[in-house]
Length: 80
Image 1 (cartoon, one colour):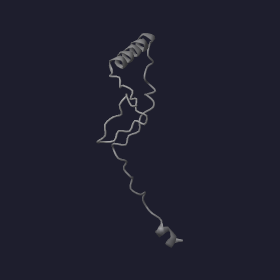
Image 2: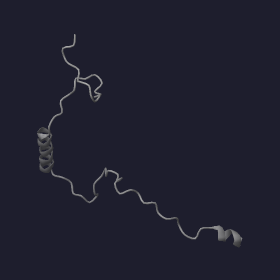
Image 3: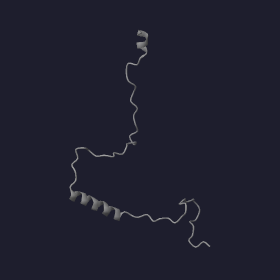
Image 4: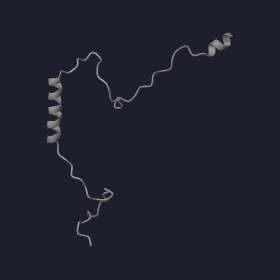
């Protein structure tokens, strides 16, 4: 029995460090955070709407597959 006890580890293995850039996104906030009033919620919604309007809108491409091959010209609209 003593020989078996000598084979057991006496300490835990070293902790494996996770990369610092691989942080998971927090899907919640603090539980102690106070709730917003209606006026604050409306102000936040207005700010978000204002930022959405000021962002540049990407134009939709009329390419079928959307793949761009370097060294080729884009398809023309007047193909016959």
